[in-house]
Image 1 (tube, rainbow, N blue to C red):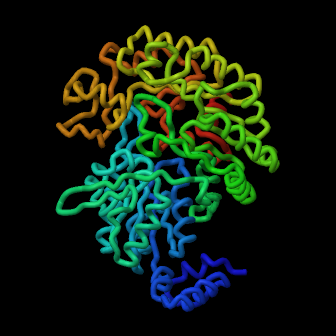
Image 2: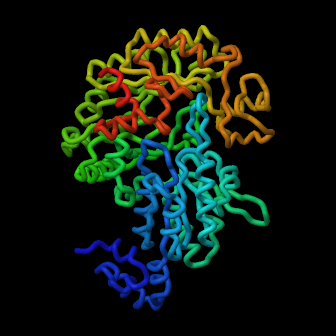
Image 3: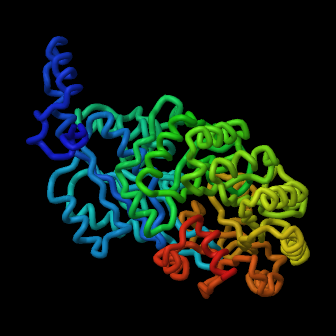
Length: 517
C-alpha cells in the first residue's frame, strides 16, 4: 500500500487521493456539518524544513526527524532541504522555493564550535543562508533548535528571521502551522518568539510530554547517508537536565525537567535504523544515566529485542550514578563507549563548576569501563574561576594516573547567558576585563563566542596545557593548528577522511583508534 505521506507531499493534485483513514476523516467532517475547507487547507499546506549545519563530518539532524514526523502526523506536507550535502547552497534554496510554502523552518544546532582555541561563529553562516531564503520567498522564516534556544532574541535579530521557537518544538511547530494556515492568533503558542510594535516577546516554553508523543519516525532526514558520511547517527532517550552545572546551557535549551521517552518507542526507533544498516549510534541525552533507572530500562529494552548484537552505540554520562550493574547492562545492550563529563578532579574546581561527583567517582568510572571492555573518554573543562597552573597540572596528572581510554582537555569556559556561571561573572563581563576573551563590544548577550579563562594561567594558557600533556597520545587538545590530536570536530579533515575510509563510531573513538594504529 502507498504510504499516506506520499499523497501529502505531492501537492494540490494529490489532495483528493485519500487513504482509507482520510476517507473516514472526510465522512466525519461532512456528518458534523463542518465541511472540507479546513481539512483541504491543511492538506495543501507545505512546510519546508532546512538544516543549515555545514560542519564536516556531518551530524544527523535528529530534531528535523522529530519535527517532520509530528507535522506529517498532523496532516501537513513536509519538504526537507539538507544543506549539509549541497555543493551550491543558493541554487538548492532556489530549487526548493520554486513553489509556495506555508513557512520555512530552520534548525540551529550550533551557534559556534564551543572551543576557545578556534571560536568559529557558525551562526554567521546561518544568517547568510536566511538572507538567501528571504530573497527568494515572502514566506515567514522560523528559527528553532538547541543552539537557537540559548539566544532566542539575539539570534533572531542577528539572522533576520521572522519568528523563533524556544525550547521543545514538537507541539509549538504544529500549532504555528495551524495558525498560519488558518490565519488565527498564535500569541499563546508555547516558546514562540515574535515581534509586536517593534518589541520582541517570548511566550513561556512548555516542555513536551515525551511519553505522549511518538517520535520514532526517523524518515525525514537521510540517516543512511549520514551514517556513511558521518560515521554514526544520534538518538534521544530523554530530554531536559536537572543537574546544577554552573556553565551548561542544556537546561536553558532543553528544560530543567528530565522527561523520559518510553523504552518501547526508543526500541522501535533504533530497530528501524538498524534495519536500514545504521548500526553505530550515539545518544543525544544530556546525561544518559540521569535518571539511572531509565537508563537501565532502555538497556533492558535493547537487550530484549536483541539489538545489542546488531549495533554499537555510545553515550554521554556523568561519573556519578554509574556502577558495575549499569555497565553490565550497557555492554549487553551494545554500548561500546562512554564520554564522561569529568570536568576536573580538584574538589574546589568541581564545586565552582557545579558538579556533584568526585575524583574518586571519576576513577571508579574509568575502572568499571576497563573491566567491562567499554571505551572511556573523560572530558576536562579547564580555566574556570580559581583555576591555577597547579590545579591544571593536578587534573592532567590525575588523568594520566587513572588511565582512561582517552582524555579530552578543553581550555576556557564559554559564557552562556542565563547560567550560574554567567551570573557570577556579570560584574567582570566588560571589554578588556581580565579573563574575558571575545567581548568586542558592550553587548553582553554573548551571542558571539565569549570565553572566560582564569587570569592566573598567564598569557598563554593553551601552551601551559600543551606542555603538561607533553605528547601523551591519550589526550586530545583543541588547537588552531588542527593537527592529529585536534579535539574540535568542526571541519576535522582527519576525522572526515577516516570515515570515508570506513571507520565508524563516536568521533572521539575514531580518533583514538587512529592514534593506536
